[in-house]
Image (cartoon, rainbow, N blue to C red; front, side, top):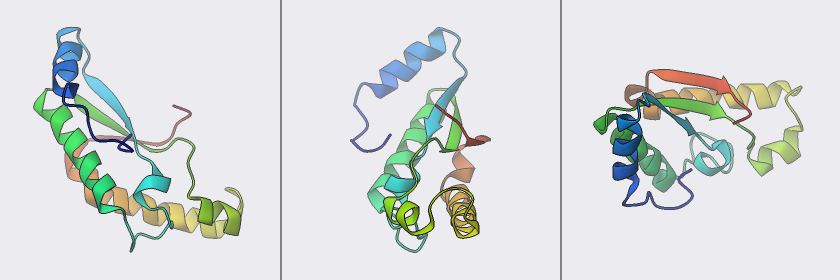
Length: 118
């Protein structure tokens, strides 16, 4: 989830998965970690680089990333200001987050899911 460095053994794990016939690997992005303020003008560059590295490593080992935009984390500052998904402002900010994610990672993944319960 890019809250910690990618383990050195991950490449071996990805190779192992491929030998077992796995073709895709689910990568849930964390809106709250990528954009803690909720604003695309203030991304956490370390977290973005971590996701880029993860997606590249998956591709290098022959696994297709399945990127999930939202599992459960809404940045706290947005949740406290706008409440839930019935807020048009929160929906607009989610659209901006999705556009940010596609700009940052779209060239590294062909499969995307908007919402998932993971």
